[in-house]
Length: 84
Image (cartoon, rainbow, N blue to C red; front, side, top):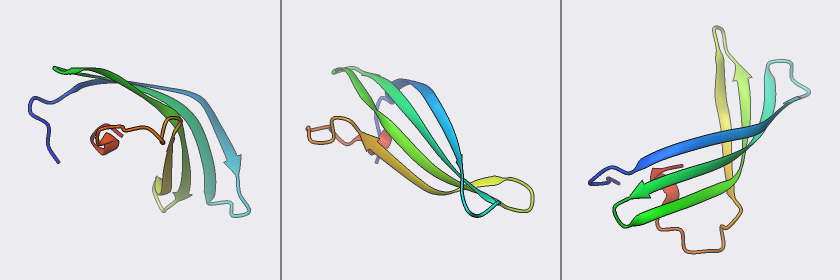
């Protein structure tokens, strides 16, 4: 997918929570988000929450799983995959 011209976006992340798992090298993280996207045809807002599973490798934490949940997922959202 592409955008021409590219949209301008701002992302706000809040309420970040970290949870331990049964495995010491893995953690679950949950956060809320609000994305504002401005394009020539208007402004739209996408909001919801994300869940991540991070695993520790030899030198860093890596995302193993990511889940994005939009609060208005039952509406027409015009291809949100570009901004998410």
